[in-house]
Image (tube, rainbow, N blue to C red; front, top):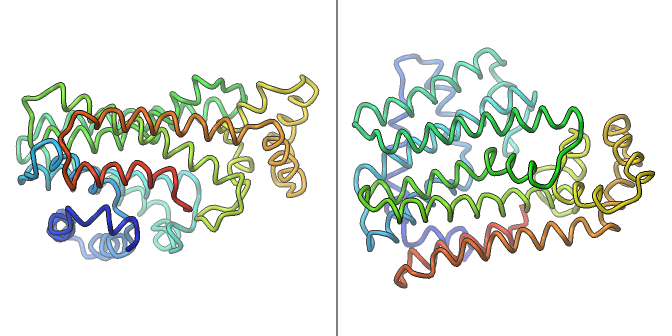
Length: 326
């Protein structure tokens, strides 16, 4: 059995019901919108975010979920989908998970409006049901994701990112949404227990950090993944392997790398040379070590919960995040 199927096993029924509820939460009176949201739903990914919500909820409550859990998972997925649609516009990207992106098929203006529609649907789903505690968790995540993206853009112009700034960028850009999934899962079933909600938020954040570092490592390997090798260098994104290499080389080498990333990022041979340079300077080994550190810290936070299929599935999920091939 595939790992993702194994992770889904203890929440199979919930995920099935969630799919139906999620479809309903996207409905609109505008035919064009329904056509586009139908297209989006039919090309969904692994749905890791709702899985985090349900597994966390069931682990902290001894196997319980409620209507709030379903709404929380739907809101997270609506917001996540909205950010992906907007991201494709920002990045001028024509593909998403091997299919055409919304902006490629319906143009940027419609894609931006669809993203806005999904965002408002998510917020209203919380407001209409008085889930203000869940709404706060999600709104903080949306704010941080926007700030993280802008911080990355600001720093990419100068390529002066330190390791600490890099962690702050990925914490906001990637980890904050997974943190929201886990704190939301706990809060949906157990809103009074602030300590558990915070512990699960931290757990999600650490997983998100490990997840993003794994993504950065893909840029340096030829594994069969969704993005081609060297794409981060072409987009002038400063990732952990590169930052480490730049901090451990001579000023002459540093000038060469920065010049390569800034002015020769379309030159395939030069990009390959930069990738080799990062490998030679142990940038990959260092990033891997950091990724495992975040993963181990996350697993420690699960230790005090009693053994259950949900805890096992979350542990499996944590390991899958850093062992995945795409």
